[in-house]
Image 1 (cartoon, rainbow, N blue to C red):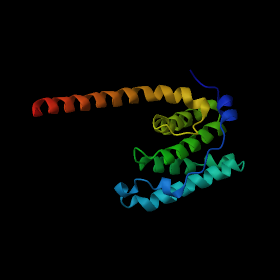
Image 2 (cartoon, rainbow, N blue to C red; image 1 turned 180 degrees about the vertical axis):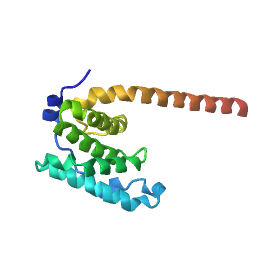
Image 3 (cartoon, rainbow, N blue to C red; image 1 turned 60 degrees about the vertical axis):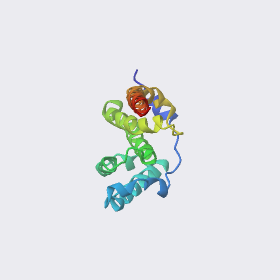
Length: 162
């Protein structure tokens, strides 16, 4: 099922601002990427603020896409705050483009929002929930399989210990 472009445009509401603390979670594993991460997070937040003020061009220039891609490339798996922010940027790009041009942005937004959905993060765009639920199914099955393997290993260890 493809969600209509206009339905996503009219139902998406500006989401809460990401805090500085939450954007820096997990940066120690990236070493020197903290400065780059702060710079990219700040650039994306500024673009989102401009969009909130009515300037759609803030997410359409080449630098907006480059910044988003660079930030996405240094994300940690559990960094749902930054994924949420990037999902918003990609969704705004989708809204500002025609449907055919914006399809990659819709996919990128869903890719960013999916881990947020799985983690139970609030404030996701309601119109994307069916897409996010479908994307969560294989991830949930994989996590269930991993849990089953872990449980079986524990059971085997307990059997051999007794």
